Image 1: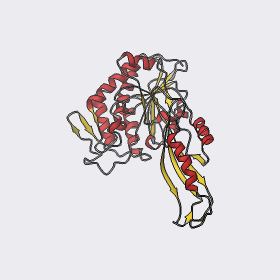
Image 2: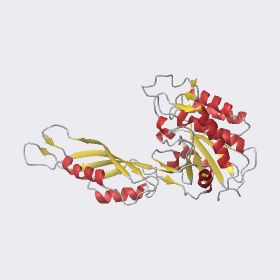
Image 3: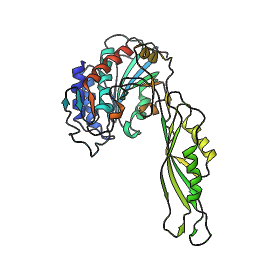
Length: 351
């Protein structure tokens, strides 16, 4: 698969709307492309994958993953988000940067790598529902793939290795008081009780700080209380966005938070953990030797639900993701194909 073929495939994907949970037509395209390239793709819902060669249980397994789905185009688009327009080195279109460029680059490298024996099993996966962390996305597929020893997650990182990624918890908090008439000295104002905890979330700093991701970041992002002006509110609810570094697991952090606040704290989920890869991992060492600079990524990806060693690496710039008139550079795709191949060709990892 040449780079020109990869770019033409990306144009077809851009022209095919694939908002999260509506990726069936895009999955059809990838499935057909894999068949045309001589592979035997498998599919579960809108997730499509293929192995480079027959499975060898003596070898470790590497997974190449990038997502098919996109966010909805926002109202600020001037161009047609599904037109796949090329101007100079830029290919415009929804999902071009996040993360179609990485998807087709990984596929091109996968095809090239499959032409020679490698010291590992290799799987290519085009996954669904990444933008909404959906249950029918990569989480539904992992049990079908067998044991994975290492994965590259294709996301726009300017082709620099993201060796750590922040996790996420969203907390729904409720402070309880006692209703009363605002004109009299009665009741217990739940807003005032909540203020103490809100201030704690604003100012508290957890002890463990990541060299790549920095400190855990907590932000109160919404507050709701009261029914009318003359009633002391019996309840005040607020939500907290918690961005977790790799020094903590979400469950551990949740327990620490509950020790410090009086309000009820209910997480919407705890499975979106932070991830990190050791700097002495063979893939990281090879990238550093190629002049690449490891960094910590504040944005979340499929890494959050992968219980094995992962590295985020891909074409494009994260700042272009989810923006109007999104684009990828054609030269970035070409560079990504060569980088993926150079990284993975003959790479030796432990099983």
